[in-house]
Image (cartoon, rainbow, N blue to C red; front, side, top):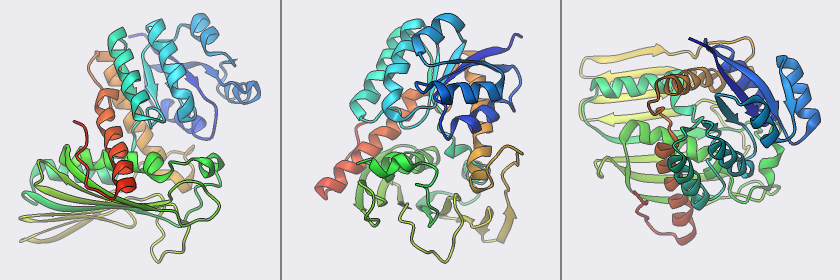
Length: 342
């Protein structure tokens, strides 16, 4: 089977890691890098031994890739995805799909109308310890879940590598909340209602850097509290970028603690195991569990492209996550419980 040829659009902080993750997959190869900054495009393209472009239409016309991987700022997603749809080229896009829910809806509809596959690089649910939780829930080891907590709280300075986040008026819910709410959906299905509170702790940013979202999920049978912070405050447990999870069921509990410790407690006792993420020489140690999850996520994206079946993180599915993000902002603004759009 011939390799699938792809082009990367965007040559910023995450692009080099995403390209390295694609290098772990068989049957796929990068043929071009495009960025509106010619210097950035040329630097990353040279490192990969491919051609550099600073114009997406020219790149699509000259290279005619089998798919594109869009790794730009969210404001750049829409124009590129529309060009791909018009050219009949499948697109994979970073989260969030777009800066506004209206544009998210429009992009998904446009690709559907064009008959072009569109998927989101939503890697969080593919992290090894978090994936193990999904398996345990499917196995029914703790019975019927009724309450859960998902936490991402860290003093790590995320703005050092991504300074542009400082200027975002919508910050942690848009940047991190989409990951955590998507993880909740992967565990418990859709939300019936949610309530959200946000705050801004740091004085040198524009958006919210801490949020708490409480959701009624699985037709209201599971209450899920999702907490997140980029506040940069000292914490007793500093385990960036780990997500901590605690789920209670009627026959036991599952916990993901620091150090990827997965503990299952039932009437038979407690079983603990470390579910370590795979290691790759190209991964940044500060982001190891995140970078390794890209490999698993992209394996599923590649499977979908080859078989013509939807990816687990198909854009139509991820649109439901973006509706939760929008509902969280609506709740935080109005101080009300909100029923997300189905």
